[in-house]
Amino acid sequence: MTNILLLGNANKNVVISKSLLISAIAIGIMYALRVFFNTDLYISDVGGIGAFASVVGTLYGILVVFILFEVWTEFNKTSQLIDKEAIGLERLFRLASYFRDNVSTKMEKAIVDYAKLVIKSKFRDLAVGQRNSEISKSFRKIAKVIHDIKFTGTHDSIIFEQIVTHYGDLHEIRTERMSQSLIRLPALLKVFLYVSSLMILFVFIITPFSNMYYGFVITGVMAFIIILVIQVVEDLDNPFQGYWTLTPEPFSRTLRNIEEAYNFHL
Image (cartoon, rainbow, N blue to C red; front, top):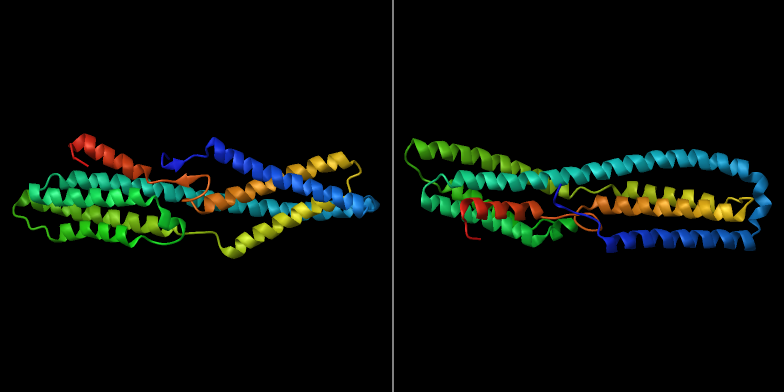
């Protein structure tokens, strides 16, 4: 999926830095509790705390796997629909080139204008859960050109039928892509993830490890993993902003193919 902007070195450092910072804070809180509240006194309760952590940890693991699978599936589906729409535009352009010159020119211009607007938008509106009315109007212009086509002869009628069918398919793909782009995890599910994450981290912080340094390592690692999971979920849930983002690159590729294959001046 070439329309995915991969995590760059700078962004990698930001993600890791955030996770390390939270890990350090968790270790600091654990040390403060151990020093000021004498959590060593509760070492005899480690068995009960461990049983509680085991149950909650199992439920948390199932929840995290489910959420990660869900956001990754939605992310991939959105990426595939973007690719399909861009490919569909190029096919529609190819069909339009078989029409008479004046019709071909109008169709080709409408298709190229639409692709340019999508590229220019960089999906900023979808990132905030909104549709771009200007882009929608541009897409409807293609339909208007098709509606106004008047033809004579068997050749044009066959091409017209193909164009109408293909535009209908393209419209369905675009509608699905728009709907898919606006899907987000339910707010309640996110809250559940955050609360569960805090609960798991809190259990490790208050656990009175007999070896203090061993406890620091375990707590730091758990905090790092939990914060990393939350960042991945947040990022994949909105595919148009964050560290891994979907871009209009397939539309740019379509325009490059049109320019090279059909000598169309962009």
